Image (tube, rainbow, N blue to C red; front, side, top):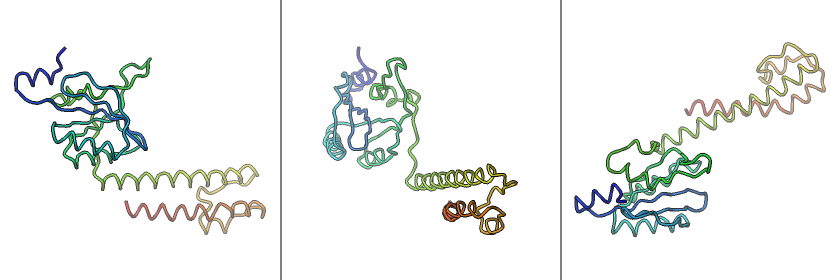
Length: 211
């Protein structure tokens, strides 16, 4: 059966595009290629730089489009392909068959995306590098807050378990810590954690100002 793109080209006299479905890994890419309306070719594994060189060569002869699923490796590949003049879509992960756990064949859905139907794939807007840096700062701040909360809760629990109540939420602050009325052995244990929590809070304050 002719594809949407093949039908368009038959009537318009245009040339077929190359569509690439990319599975992103840390050290390599697995790529499915479709030329025009032909069936997708078997997946090929590429080293990262070798793949970019291959795309450059293909682009000399055909229009190239690419798609990959949003993942933990960010939007660096999309930016590098865009720098080469290639339209690259990042999409939400999907499955065709939940029972068989088959990943969506994005390269086939690209056919419907390219002419006009932007709803055929759930597209993800790639952030700018500045936006991504801000996200990383925010994420790191939230991680440090969680670590601080775990440490302060553990030591607060230590005091409650030994009958010391009420315990201030932020017992680790310098003034609160010096005023703690607890047995010396407990204060020695708290003294192992308190400088760490103070250092974490200092970094949290710095990140807050940056944000």
